[in-house]
Length: 364
Image 1: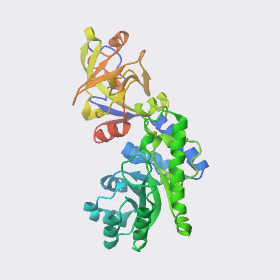
Image 2 (image 1 turned 90 degrees about the vertical axis):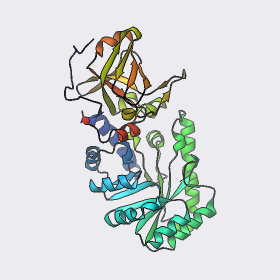
Image 3 (image 1 turned 120 degrees about the vertical axis):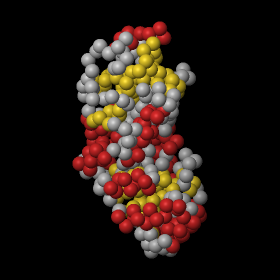
Image 4 (image 1 turned 45 degrees about the vertical axis):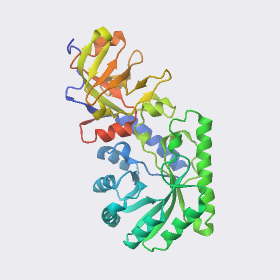
């Protein structure tokens, strides 16, 4: 079966990221309304999209401060005109010269969780802002919140170097991802905020100058009162994805990113199509359904200005480097002949956008 249906996107010849401008704007305006009403700074994490045009939409909405996940990303965003940048990953001291260079060009802040790193930065006379990273329970990086003496040592070391200025305490509640229960999510948020406030109070008057920075999309999206912190750093909520949808963080129609994939194989006997959309386009991030099945994306029907769900649930069932295999409802097979396009909503938009950042994009 070959293409015999209307082709709404003849300009698309290969896997292409489609960015839904209206959905992006709505997601952005929603979080800006919340942060502005509560006088909390919004410092979005740009790793989600890494696209200069989306950044320009943010600037037009009044965003001036951003988060990135590497010095390379900080350099790229500096070239795009961003001047207030936090690199939200512990410092790689092997890139000390790049830190020094960026600190001369931007209002740069970096993360530390060990005094040795602070000594190196201070001895290099780098003028940079420092966030002390806290581990509030995810067990990734940062100083566990109960280790007050270690936190005091790091802060004392920062204060010993005039070129360094401590911004405050920063954390990422990574254990909120996959948290379906609203009450549990709120409990985790309040525990982290209370822990950080308790630490800040340990420093008396000095603590009054130290800010609190929280960063995760589930909390930013689902916690109504975020006024106990000074800034939030979510990124995923600009696009959202199936992972956030499955846990109730967003609605299906808030997902603003879709991969347009050409159909390259048609197998009616097994109700499957093959698409040019594999791990090098979507990543191998999988989502487990309640029945235990692992999926790699959800197909949608593309239309002018967006996409619609299919008539019945369908999934990207299998994935290899360049291929994806989609099992379709029997009645949908006629809609996706060889040469047509099908849309795929990603499991994790940040990974898909990163993989595809140098590939074609289409704003709709």
